[in-house]
Image 1 (cartoon, helix red, strand yellow):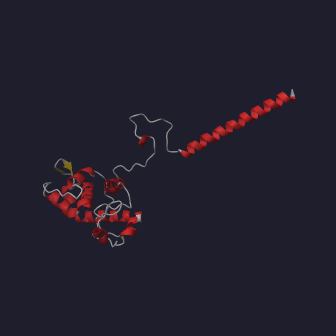
Image 2: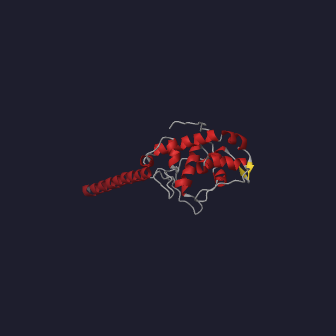
Image 3: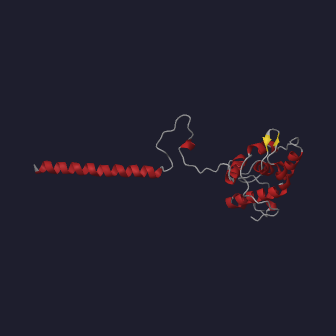
Length: 205
């Protein structure tokens, strides 16, 4: 009888230990995958519906990340075939305007690239301040003109070419070596909130 009781006691102990072990495994799995829901994605669901990704939308962060993806797929160390550099594809002349001469260091410094992008937006906003005031809200070639579209187009083609497009009511349209145009950027990057950018002739990095 004692042997039977001992056997049952050992069996109960094994069951209890196993239960605790399974609970521990479940907690570990949830810690390893904190951003996933327990649902399995359907055919029409994007993986983004299952992962908690910060939403930047039409904010300035959304604006700069959209430009970065268009320019370099968001890669800081990219140099294209024409020698444009970094996440936002800066030309050397533009970098020199901000006293950046060491391009190797520039490619290895994400913070400097972000500061340079913001500074360039600030300069372009100052150069184009009158055109932004005159043209924002208008429609040219079926495109609603916005401040963010103007700043994006200036990043592509320079402020001077954006002025020509706006002042010619869209009859002048600059294209770069890869075929991207002022008009395309005005449309693609329309409607972002770039009010955080202050117009400045000489912004500090």
